[in-house]
View 1 (spheres, one colour):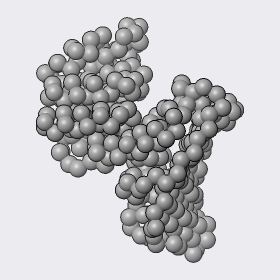
View 2 (cartoon, helix red, strand yellow):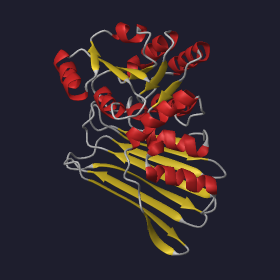
View 3 (cartoon, one colour):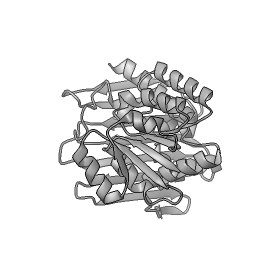
View 4 (cartoon, helix red, strand yellow):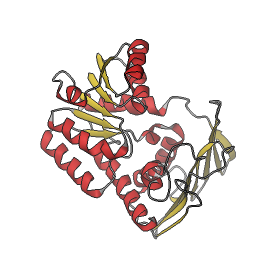
Length: 310
């Protein structure tokens, strides 16, 4: 497969992963920083360009990978589809319901597909939760609480942007696990520009879920994610801490009739798994858990939260 990548931020990382995959024969990266492009060309052996139009119109490219600022995702996804290309897109897939509709219409009329880097679905701890819910091995899921916490390291993640740009991964998990449960309550606080703490509840007669995300943790606080899942017969507790020096500590414990047990987690890279899965789905035409429809489910929940917060 021949791939065009738009952007040299996350795009550079995507390129480094694609370059190792069988079946990828050509990679072209668009960027505006010629020094950065030269570095990528030397390190990865990829082609480079400063023209988006050159990539999108290139008849030899099969896939356009969009790693641009979020407000540009829908524009270039639609252009790529119209040019006969499949699209892989970073999260969030788009920033409005109107853009989501336009992307769906473009996908349907093009005969090509959009997939979105919802990599949380390839993290072993979250895959284990999904499989546990669907297999019923612990009985019914009663409640799940998910969190994502970071110091202010990622630009503007204030009340107007935190749902689409940080909470989106937990929203993806909730909609994947539970369908599209109604949002029953939302609370948010912002002490500084570009920083926020947000809590959302999803309650039904059968189960409940909650998400807490923060972009205003102290600078000394490491990036942290996790969940607690309450079943009829057990509880799962996942906790992951990513330290500034690159060290990662992740544990998943099961508390059930047999006592406390640690679930040994696969150390594979969820990002790499997501990209590899997308290539296989594009090539085989199979149903996808990172399809545009899946992404829009999470995005629409984010839009609703943002409207009520900001």
